[in-house]
Image 1 (cartoon, one colour):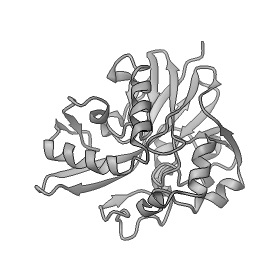
Image 2 (tube, rainbow, N blue to C red):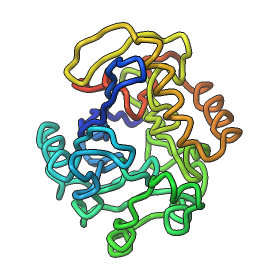
Image 3 (cartoon, rainbow, N blue to C red):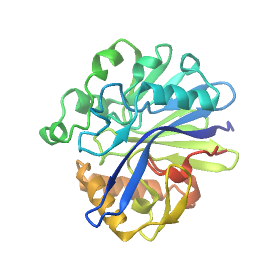
Image 4 (cartoon, rainbow, N blue to C red):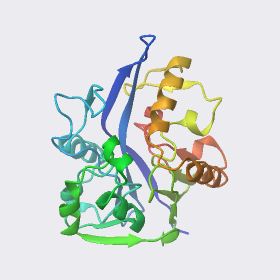
Length: 263
């Protein structure tokens, strides 16, 4: 059996304030995986120029660009040119902006996700969820489209989880500690997976209790990005059935997983 290690990477953040003036923030996150031979990157952060005046399309103070990705990889001890494979949980702008940094890699994604990015639904255009500047860049790279679930490498499986996007996928990763799920935005944070979850970690590592106003505000914000709620819940039930405990679930935007190595 092959064993991998997983290191979450900090790619920047977005922040804001609820109507009751309670501050919130969450990070953009990628993942570096290695089995000692192959080097894999999951998701590539925000592309240069996407934020205008350090604000997201929704007006929130935000940071994230190519420099953040390079710095995160440097801290993980790997150079962009060393990455063998890039796997995309989905193609939304905060997850797929820097494919051009990895010209030697094979870029892996669901076929349905590619089709959605190339020809998005009108509601997806309204939400500005895709940064279509990456399309011609990906077309120049070595890409591998997959369709549905796939035992991709020894100890590394891909699972198609539609809902947040049409072609979203999770990674199931075997480590010496157990089997982890890299959830992408099927679960942005732990409280979406576990409704009674009330821990909150800021990107500086400080911990507090999750304020109900923040939980309600972010839940509504996350729900807006779901293109198919029926598929989303079905995918959630499926993935949670694979997770033996919350320890083995790695959400797409939860700061509590930063600064750690799993496996």
